[in-house]
Image (cartoon, rainbow, N blue to C red; front, top):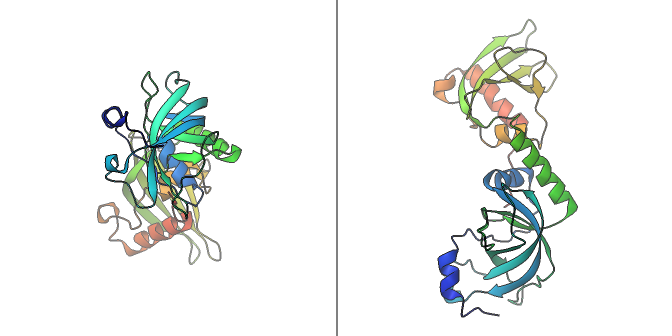
Length: 263
């Protein structure tokens, strides 16, 4: 059904980022991006939807319809305060091959939203910030949110400088790269090369580099903040003119693996 009477109220009440549908499941980087951006994450059930006029959706992507979603809140994964039991936001839903909207009533959702107003009006924080709920998606999101809010992994903003030392065996070396962080703390990425072995990457906090350095595991918050935000090439001001050091940096970034996003 197309809303007529709510045209003015909707356009005045919502500053939104409508989500476009994607077929691929969210990657770790997708979920981390959304979780970092969202002050509130909820599991909810769709109570009803209402279609917005095309004339009131000038920026709508082809093959989509803009809907006003009304949902019942089942749980708040994170929230700075209590969340209204009923929430409202706009979402750009994909049409099927016949140009029809999918049935949504009763659908379980996970949504990353701005802090709702008292009347429940909110907005999705980004494209793709509404996803069909399943237990695995919720568990992954909860784990990311918990680690982000623990403060144990700093936000990495770049690389300040680095140095390289050859080992006693041909082909053996260790490079250390001093990373910059949002909180000004010390973080060092250590890249160790040994003949016949894959380069190892570890990260140490503080001024001392010792055996307590943490190995970087895929699909963790540490991996995400390294793989998704560090430059592919070592900047000149951080030692990029040193060919061997720059090669170690490039190999380290490649060894971390690509920061894949599907949303």
